[in-house]
Length: 305
Image (cartoon, helix red, strand yellow):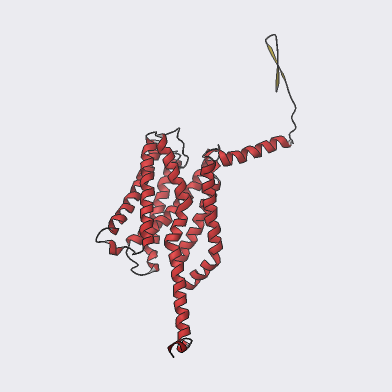
């Protein structure tokens, strides 16, 4: 619209616009791409999440054929379910990483909260099941001992989902929409309690590693390093949640950093700590079987002559 001022009067002259103009469409697309990359959390935040989650999904896809074959040979239904859960969480995490702009887009709040709820709950399920496996003892009955931790983890995560859904849809508290401008004390109190529980559990396991109960835990350096990393990450997140709840800008930055680290690197850490060892053990087991069969067939009799 063009305004023409004359002797205090305002005359509006309509200016026709072409509804099929490609200029507007290109501007809209360019603005959307710019917002997706640079707005909301910024380019570095989005790039780290997208590249890390995409790289891990591609790695799983590259190893998929070999992994499926090993899981079929092992015939462990629990490990198959755990590997399938890892795949599901990895895909959800990739979608969550690519759709970061939803958090800052009006009208996408509900979709973002639902996606975040299922993504974080899936990752928490894997985390809790591994904690339960570590606490139940040092491979008492083999990998099938994952049955009990699996059921316990499902129960705990189910209750966690109900609690978060109550906060989201009952109290209307935006658990998964973070902003340094608005401090929701109930929200940050919940996250602080959540991180406090996890920090206490990891701290307990660390204490067990340095006490007379260390023999009850798996004697593998990878598990100990995993516990140390998760203890530090949750302790930092607990500290950041407490600071953010009091309106501290540094706390919000630190909390965002811990979230990026968790979503970008937790699933690869879990795979390296737990599943990679399982697949390697399957390789060693198969090599032992092949060696025994060849020895029984007399392939190594000449070595003794």
